[in-house]
Length: 130
Image 1 (spheres, rainbow, N blue to C red):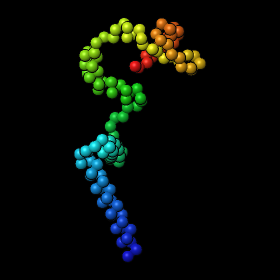
Image 2 (image 1 turned 180 degrees about the vertical axis):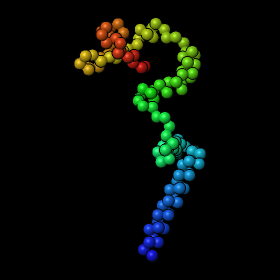
Image 3 (image 1 turned 120 degrees about the vertical axis):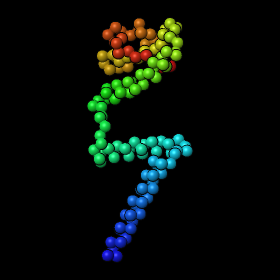
Image 4 (image 1 turned 90 degrees about the vertical axis):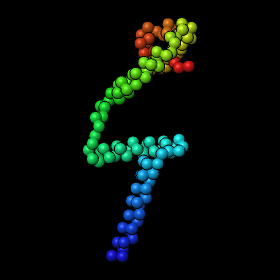
């Protein structure tokens, strides 16, 4: 019996410490960015574990495209307001825009304007950020 008390005590102590850490990460408001990041990660992780354990699954998207679609649907009003407040790009800005595209061999190529991109690769040419 004496041999059993020691492992039970340490197991109980471990579980109490884990409960304290859990409540600190969930209940205590973060005071610095590191604590906020760890707390957000833990809350997300904890909710996923609880969903797996108790079978309360949310309808998960089946593909990356579905995730992107959900995010676009959620941010559509914000994006529309953002684009309305920005002025239309000038022709000088479009003239200075550089493009990147991949040729048939898979090599990346750069062009100073969309006119310099060969016709067969114009559809996949992407503007480079400034």
